[in-house]
Each structure stands twice: as C-alpha cells, then as structure tokens.
Length: 393
Image (cartoon, rainbow, N blue to C red; front, side, top):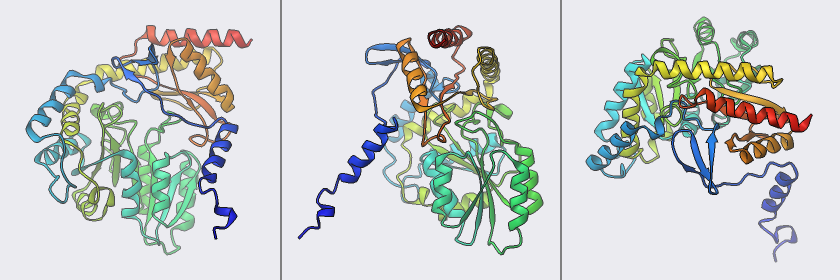
C-alpha cells in the first residue's frame, strides 16, 4: 500500500511553482526571432535589443556564416563522437593553436560550453583535501563547479583582495593539498572588473593556483580583445565564444601540462560529444576578426561610459560597472519586472534580473551594449527611462 505522503509524486513541483509565483520568480521561455545584430522580433513586434551578450555583433557577421557553411560542407553536420573517440577533427588543433597564440599561452583547449567547463574543470583540479577561495559574486557555473569539487570552499568579499589575502594567510599552514583562487575577470551581473595584476601577485606570493573566468572580457577587453587575462601569468583561464565571439562553446587557455591534464581528467571533455564543425568554423572566423576590431571596442567602451554618465545624471544607480555590462539597480523584484515590461511596451528589450540570480533586494535591469549600438539607440533607451521616471513622479 502506498503511503498517503507519496500519493502525488508531483506535489513538490506544484509547491515550487506556487513559491515562485508568490515571489514573482517564475520563469518561462518565449520565442525570439533575431532580425540583425541589435533588433529582434517578439510576438510580431520589432524591439531594440539591449540584453544580448553579442558584444561585437559577430553573430550575424558574414564571415562567421560563410565559414560555418564551409566547415559543414567539408566535415558534415556533426562530429559523431567525443574528442577522445573519433570526434577530434583536425580543425580542433588548428583553432586551439590560433587561440593560444592570441591568448599568449602555451596551449588552449576547446570545450562544449562555459557552464559545462566551469562545472567540470574545477572538480578535475581539486581533490577533497583542497581549499577553494571563491569571489562572492562569481557566476553560478563557478559556484556549482566549486560545490562539485567536494572540498572546503571559503568565499571572499567581492573584489576585496585584502580579505582574500587574509584568508590565504589563515589557511596556508592547515595541510590542504592545494589552494585555488577562483574569480571572474568581468563580473556578469555587475559589469565590474577584477584586478588581474594583484591576483597574479597573490597567487605567486602564496603559491596558490589561480583560475579566472574571462568570458565577458573575451573579445572586448585586453590586448587585441583577448581578455583581461591576456599577458598575465594565470594558471588557468576559462572563456567562451558565445558572447563577443558570436558563436558557441568554451575554451581553456593554459600551459601544455594543464592542457594534457584536462584531456585526461576533465569529465566535461572526456564524456561529451565534440562541438559540430559548423560551430568551430564560426569560432575560427571570429578569431580572425576579433584582433582587428580595436575601433569597435573603442566605440563600445565610449558608448558604455556615455550611457553610465547619462544614467547617473538621471538619478539611476549602476553599481560598480566599468564595462559594457551596465546594471540599473532597482531593488524589488516587482519593480524590476514592471520596468522591464514597460520598456518592452516601448520597443526596448532589457531583461529584469532577479533572485536567485542576484541577491534578495538587488533586482535590476541589466543593459548589455553591443558595438552595433549607436548613440541614437542609447538615447532611445534614455528617453524611455526618462518617460518612465516622469510617470512615477
């Protein structure tokens, strides 16, 4: 006889739905049709898109499309297996050599996605006797990777290197097999930057293993747009091609020793089907384009500064943003959702970011600028926000 407690085996799902509805945290998928690099069609309406990670507008670039098709014609539509079986087509090595040269590292390794990379790379490096020191505002993929390592994790205050050094000093002689610092270079929710030079100095001073997620800086910041880590002696850099790269997939930039270790020990590489040829074709094209896009990067940063300055003049708070990612801090989830909906009604797509993605009371709308955005596009957003403010006064 079935215990009454377990009669409705889906009751936990209904309870979670109820909880999320009450807190205005229920998420739903909706169809989006991209029209170009900065406009989308939703339910028959054209909207100016300010929430894409396509920072250089490469997702629609003719060269990425062309090379994707070329790779399909040459290699087919799928890679047919994991890279350790028979999916390691010759284009992988060519792309990784090109990437390593641009990142100024000995080697590189292409993986399937940024989330998967962070979830599997950290557990591959750490054992149960390790200590991980993780920035307070790290992305969920890094947090999950730290948890899956099944070792002690200590969280240091966001970008507080004095606190980080204090934690390292306190734990240095406690018998850990190894100690890791895990951080992002550009933080995805706040748009601020970590101090790469200071982190490298700490890593070297205490002989600590440094892991940096360079996803939101790749293509946008650093030498030839190769990220904030480029030129720094960082043990392991993780990045993605699905943002400024305009395509999909992830990479590791590291020494040849770590590359070989990951080939042998990283479950995210070993047990998954290799990325299809079309994706590698787009990545290959992006790596050809990005180094020559200094003018686009300069325009992007100038527009970001113009937008931040204008928002501050209107009384909006953008937290500590200093990059192309600009949050407008709202606070309450309901208010952030209301503003996001109002902007959509006025033809501007800017998503509300709310818990659990950000802490309680820190809901926001987050603008992600593209090099394709012009001042007139930005002024359109500012005008909409000004009108919103007048309706609330």
